[in-house]
Length: 268
Image (tube, rainbow, N blue to C red; front, top):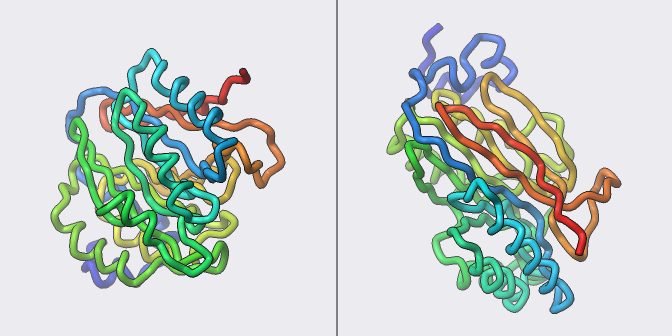
């Protein structure tokens, strides 16, 4: 079956999957890549100075991995109230990592006045953007709608950015997406138009999407792509599913494939 891009965008993910047109099916063979590791954490919810010792432990543990991660991705909600001092604390402490980190905003990174100014000033050009590493492509997306936490929509500006930037990517290379709001079908607090994001990625070699917001481990599979959320890594917040563990993902990329494991924050 051959469909135009416009026709693809009109289809639901379920229909595309049934027709064998989901990521990896249309994509060419995975590009040869060099193995590397990276970390993914979500929902830090920086609140006040009491969080600092916790984040310092997180950074120390992340920096000590024998796999020597190439970078960290933070899937939104750096702050609790979107305040400058809360976001600045995360930026300052995580700058102590032995590797770079990338961020996307969450709904808690807005202030009560629906402003995102502190985040924008501290992390300029970190709403919608791409970066590459060792033959892999990474797309970071702003999926927020102010401080709203449910029944949200991914902004038209983000969808427009995707339409403008995706043609610049290589469809043969493996692709990873980072968002705050979950993209997996049926996951709580998923944006009502999440399919509009996924459909735009249909003919790309999508390997995974890492998200947060719902503080729980979830996994949905579409073709070869794994869409996940994870437990939070906050001092001041718990998990929505009632689990006690706090932590992050350690992900290994090799030969166009990803292997992921949950790393629990150690006590003390």
